[in-house]
Image 1 (spheres, rainbow, N blue to C red):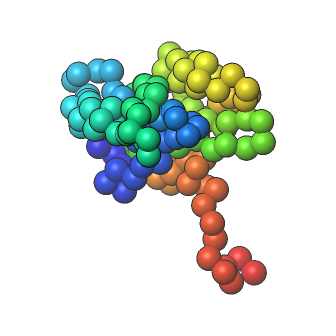
Image 2: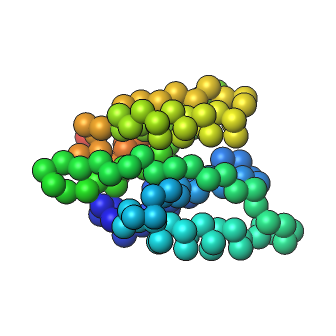
Length: 142
């Protein structure tokens, strides 16, 4: 709920490396995203690599409901962006889950600096850090 893309992967699950997938999960069974994200987690757990091995799965919480003008927004920590030696991670002023998400990612990526960036204002545009880094078609902005 709140995802205007009907579930683009950059909001749900991402590779951290060739063997590790981070998956967004909602921990509150009363949240309307709980069941669908549990189903997604089950599907990801069944995936195999080219050699038939299961992937290492890292669960990361959702940030809780983020709304603007009564509209639920597609806030997720999975919309991160890798840069040289670091990982930029969107945060949403949800102290407990922001902290947990950053800790989970730092533990999974010990060789990188995990940096949280408040994207509360940015998510009103229905995207976060990864969305901002997308390619621009030729001729646009020139």
